[in-house]
Amino acid sequence: MALSTQRDQVDFMFSSWLFESEDNPDVFTNKNEDTILAALEATVASEESGAHMVRRMPGVIPQLLQVLRNSDFSGAELARTISHDVVLVAEVLRMANSAAYNQGTAITSIDHAVLILGQNGLRQLITGVAFKPIINLNSGSFTRMVAPRLWAQSERCAVACAHLARNEPVDPLDSFLVGLIHNVGLTVSLRVIDKMSDGRQPVGSPTFCNSLAAYGRTLTANIAREWHFPDKVVTAIAEQDDKSAGRNLSPLGRILMMADHLSKIDTLARQKHLDAEDPRLLDDLTGKEIDCLRRLCADEEKDWIAITTARQ
Image 1 (cartoon, rainbow, N blue to C red):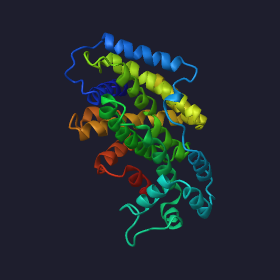
Image 2 (cartoon, one colour):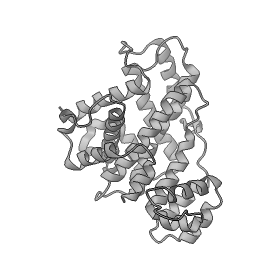
Image 3 (cartoon, one colour):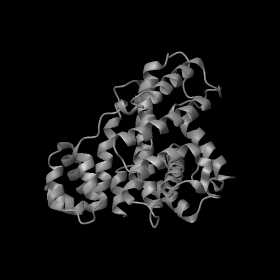
């Protein structure tokens, strides 16, 4: 089976699971869905381009990411910067004391934790802390149901990106970052669904989900620009609207496309919606891609950032 057909089928199964719309017989949009998509179209076309729908990134995060791009970063200076953000302090200590890193005495010092985690660990932890608060479970029923599922898949996608990026001409931080944020636009779109849905007609038809995914990617790219992420990250996200381009995608765009596909397979396999060892899913994958999928499926559902960092 061609990879594009596999991807379409997996995308359909994933969106059906997200919205619990497996029993919805409608293929095309209903009036409720049309109203939601019209609101999203207006949001994307607005002056803010949808970037206003998420809070601004805490000022310390871009500063830390810039420092971490330099292999000669100062651990002591980094520890002082982290100390200014209580959320980061708690997360750095939690990760340093996780099973992936700590085999002995509890770590209570930020300086010690920075040393233990190293450059890759800090990069990936900081990006995770920056984006998880986007999920606001008080927004409405669709956000409560769908947002945690999207975040879980985003974490797995980031792990897959990190694996697929090895020995490729891409920045490791960009690879992890693009996987982690690729669902940000879709996540904030859930707020529009919560606001606009009439509660009488179902949400989640295949036509609706395809359009929603496209708006979500546009919003993600807009948000990434607003937050001054690297151009390569923004480009890779925007390229996902043209998956048929194949080899015309940038290296980071190809990695994201495949990581998204593999992480969806892993997510659906965990929900018993498919078998990740189905030969029809594996036939058109490379050995590296199959290895990546099996690593995802083998990992327990726990601290994904710690798992991928420990293997760097």
